[in-house]
Image (cartoon, rainbow, N blue to C red; front, side, top):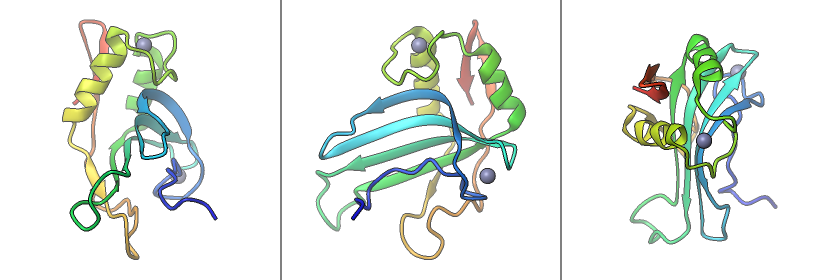
Length: 144
Ligand SMILES: [Zn+2]
Ligand SMILES: [Zn+2]
């Protein structure tokens, strides 16, 4: 039986698997904690997204959800901009703490993402998501 808090990077629109374009940051997976922020791209839908997954096994039952997922649409052109302008030679390295990775993480936290429903028939519905764009400031790609 797979753990229900297992993360998925599947496309919210077509449910197909997605390419990880940027591994912004990740902690874990540990027994009680796993979170990450990634840029994902679906070639079939030609659309990207900024996705944050968070599992916190220490939350008190009933007070807060232990799994939370946020997503925001990134246009294909913004994903292309990240591929060309992300100023780190290891874009998939979630553990990298270079200036580019830190800038991407800091701006991803502030970016206007949509929290996806974790339960019910609308689970992980792509409806009504916000859109985030990519700009390059002082040579570093950032989300806004
Ligand atoms: Zn798709
Ligand atoms: Zn880096």
